[in-house]
Length: 391
Image (cartoon, rainbow, N blue to C red; front, side, top):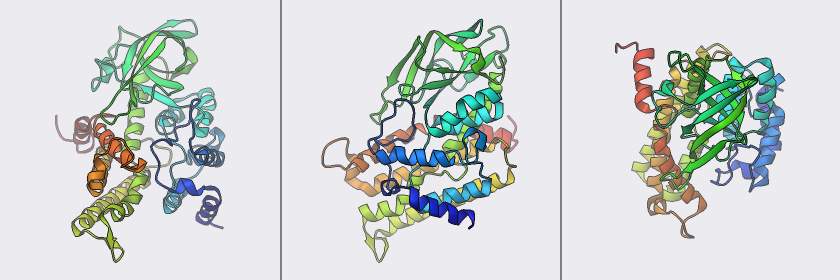
């Protein structure tokens, strides 16, 4: 039996029916110590996929991953898409800190953290931006002072997504204030329940508070959790940003699963005629989006195939981040058009949970062009690092 047949058979037997439907807003799959599961199948699906290693299909098996090669990993994504399965597990553990640990972590650090990420035991957040250090991230001022086998951390971070629910944070701190700003930074991990950590959610226009400001007052972090070496954190930070931008852009076949439902969404709200979307103008818009998305997916795949196995993302991650962000925003704009007045709901029985979730997701998508590096920053990187244009 070939891998596709094996994969298809396993998914048919193990993916619950409720997981083959659009994701409701209250059924996130980030995992973590404080996670709740309104739908028990959500946890069951994550556990089953984690046991196979398929929450991180290309990670080495010794760290809990699936050990798949690129071709088999792509087959798995195709088969998940075929049955319209929701992601089994998402989050910064899989898309950001995990890949960084694989590249820069010691064997002890990998064994400690990677299996927990695969299983969804720990929810991670990112401590990068500060109130005075956004695009100029290297100007960060959160400081860490060595004290034996620990560092004492003081300062604050902002836009720390999910910090109010996170178990651990990967954080940039200044360990040498006398060094040039890029050379005195360290990359360190610590538990968010450590005394001195204080998290304040920031309310967004979507009505949610996924972003937070996080304060550190004499927080003690273990020296053994410095990744990549003391004062070498900027190298790790830059690579992690490439992983983040790759994830946001949908590289590796992860272009929004919701896009699979776009045609069905149109038929539900616009109507259908002879199996087609009834409104010709909307049909053309959906078709245009699908063609563009398919071309984008092929470009992502081509770049992936040209990249040797195990090689980290390149500056192309900025192009994917920019383009994937625009695709996501366009998709949600289309969905809002399809819904008509049903897109205007904020609460009440006149609107379904899915409608309310789409409206909030549309509002939330406006931050896509800022988070992970603004679109303007990405276009500068594309111009300089990919096209080789002069300053």
